[in-house]
Image (cartoon, rainbow, N blue to C red; front, side):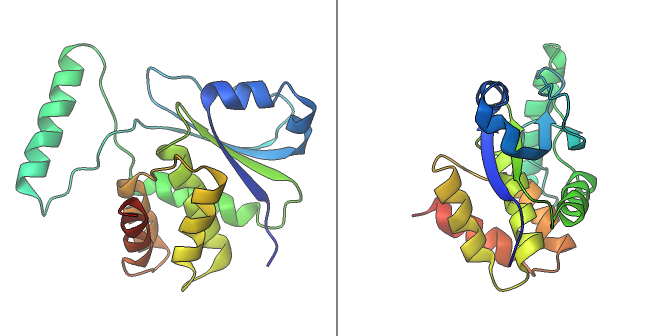
Length: 181
C-alpha cells in the first residue's frame, strides 16, 4: 500500500524543517491554526490544505455537563478577546478529501499546528485511516505514535472523521485506548 510518508510538527519545527535540505521532500502540507496562531508560509508547495480552528473540545450534546463546561470556556475566551473555534465535520471532511487527492503523491506530507500534538496528529491520523481502509485503525494510531510520540490526537476531530469514513467508532476507540497505555 503506497501513500506519502508523514511528518507531524509544531509551527516552529515545521518552519525550521522547510529551511533545511530535508524540507525538499515535503510535497504537501496540512496547516492548522486558530485565530491567534500562524499558518506556516511555504512557497513552492502547491498541494496545501489550510484550516482554521482551535485546540478546543467539540461540544457533545450527549454530555450536558461537558456542554456547559465547553460553553463556559468558549464564553470566557471570547470575553477576554480570544474567541475559540472548535473543529467541525467540514474540517474532517476537508482533511479526508485532501488525503484522498494526494494518496499517490511521492514525497512527504507535513501536518502542522501550533504545538504538533493534537490537531496535526488528528489530521495525520485521518489521512492514514483514509489511505489504509477499515480494520486498520489501531495500526494507524500506532504509526502516529511512532511518528510523534507526544501525539494526543484531537478526539472531536477524530470522531467526525470516524463517522465520515464509516468506521463505527473504531478510530475513536483506537485513539482512546492508546491514550490509556
